[in-house]
Length: 211
Ligand SMILES: Nc1ncnc2c1ncn2[C@@H]1O[C@H](COP(=O)(O)OP(=O)(O)OP(=O)(O)O)[C@@H](O)[C@H]1O
Image 1: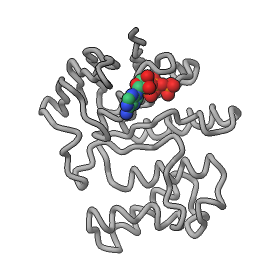
Image 2 (image 1 turned 30 degrees about the vertical axis):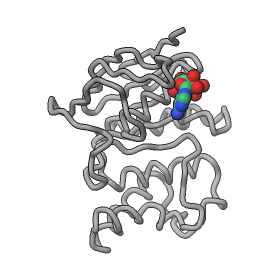
Image 3 (image 1 turned 180 degrees about the vertical axis):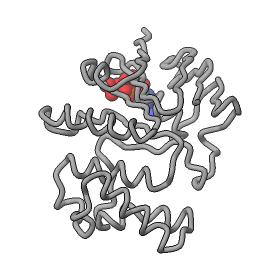
Image 4 (image 1 turned 90 degrees about the vertical axis):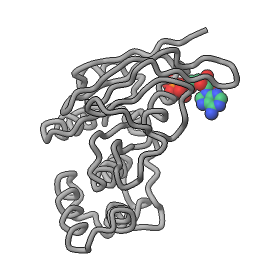
């Protein structure tokens, strides 16, 4: 279980997060919703350690942890960015295996097995040798998910997973998240799309805009 207790964040004296308390249970999907500019991305960046918070506590299974000082190899939370952030000069297979190889220092047999399993799970088995520019948006997103999962995170977090894709893809993305949930993967989804949130989430947390 991941818990956030009384998380506060200000930018230039302006309070964006004013004492956020939330938790996500293992195997569940938590959606973080709220109006534009309310601080959803700020919250996601805080809990993934991409930025600092001013105060508050992060707990994993009751133990405090600092998202900013977590070692890369601990990789508590994997992130799927809105625009996927794939390495454009690497193939799908190389995108998925780079961090397990360099950060986790896995042997080839290990990272290759994991990558083949993930590519199969995400319906990318025949796409391993392609480069990001050759992929559709939905495929790029699945590569980003495979790349994050290859690091064996405790939790997978998404920033607006539907917004860079054609609206017709919304149900497909929802099905993908529910499929991963059935595999026991804990997920946090930042979205402005309430219908999407209702479809996938076990719990919905609303970030309110502060004046
Ligand atoms: N690094 C930063 N420096 C200063 N202000 C920032 C910074 N990052 C975010 N903000 C401000 O914090 C507020 C919340 O931004 P954030 O992107 O978290 O909102 P959001 O809820 O994700 O919005 P959207 O749905 O439009 O993406 C905004 O007013 C934004 O301008």
